Image (cartoon, rainbow over all chains, first blue to last red; front, side, top):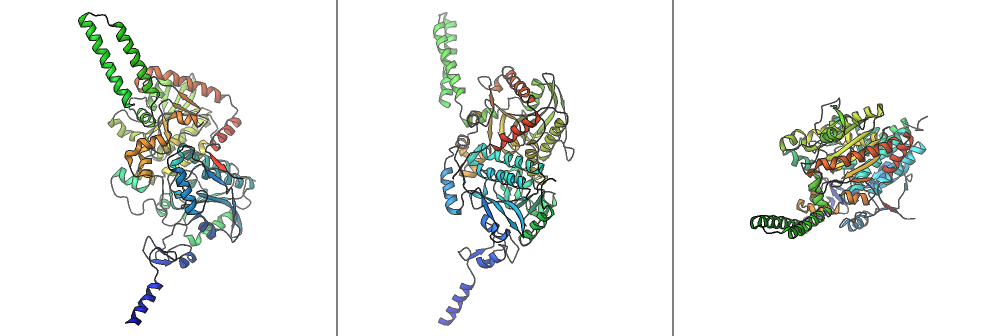
Length: 279
Length: 316
């Protein structure tokens, strides 16, 4: 009897339980994976292909060549200009929980040897919402990419504009889009990678304006959230509505690329536009 | 506001009673009535001078205010409506065309709300679909071709959260307007006349001069939406209205708005004739100012305006 129990105990240990430090459950097919295996598989479920949401540093880790990424403008922090109730506390908590200063990391690195400027939104920081710091860091990033003629990539994962920054959050949509207009004038490549989720003011600004728009499989992409739409029209939404594949079908994305192929795809696109800038 | 309002109603009744009484009895009460009327006037002023965000929002949403087509027809002359995005359909929630302002041709655009439910359903409550933004961009590019200034009248609850709008690329349509307007080679005046609601309003807001009517509001999200998302309780919308700082006066303090155009005491809905000349005067003045700027200066100035939005801290 004791022997039987021991065997059972060993089996339990081999099958990780839902959400622990060492294991994660796939939100789609409920399979439980060891973190180590998941990491090796670029955080994609080996059973159903579900793409887990990545933190900004995870994204940088799987995209850039080892030790090639150099962060820019790391010291920009938000101010509570509106004196919005609870915003200071929310910022402090987000910083503590994520270890980040703000909802985006920008920098320059190499992808399979190709140099690129990149902005990576951090869904782990206030849902990757865009306030003045996110807007300013993107504007600076695009300015550098433009003046050096090096392609820029922005990986979006965001709930949209940050309400607590009121009108200034809304105007970041204008600011980032205007910065892209200047990049266009310089003839420099901009690739937008839309990951789960890309909604609201981020979707309705820089995320939709890529020379090439790439979606990750199954990513939720849209302006209004599905719940709001459902409330408005009072009927259930069609299967797959506002997912990457749906947007591809409706002409909003150039391609849907599985995470495993993303790095190579980005490198190929960068190579096409090498020595960018209008000649 | 409620207190002042109640006092005001009481006072008005009292004045009427006194007047009736003096007429019936033939007693001279002129002085008393005069004093009370003065007090009522002062209270009324107080009432409308100290509206909070929520009250302003109600005024901004008042269905008796002029709509875009009213402005086109009453401030401009010879308005010619132009329709369609050339791709899908004509969006009745976003109207535009060409018109004369003081004898000069301009392109006018605006969100169109209805005056009653029937009209509002036809106009989708002033909430554009992607084809609306695309029509706007088409007309703006047309304006650029003919070096006509553009005047955008902004008054919308926001972009329409519907199936078709998403299918046809609402995000892309708004984003494209933001990018293209940033470099459009003609002056653009953006005028918030009522409700400046999030992305739907922003898609007509990029330009060289942001004006707001005294009782207009402009916000990243509706207070109802903000309260529902942040505090899971839409009934806290009044608190959200205060927190979002959406009044023209707040935005002017932030330096976001170039000029607040005054309205009649009780609001523009109360007296169009009194309110419209001030609007026309402001538009003509800003159009002249912008018209004198060389194109290069205008575009550099526009980029500076856009890129300077927002506040942050940068540690050394």
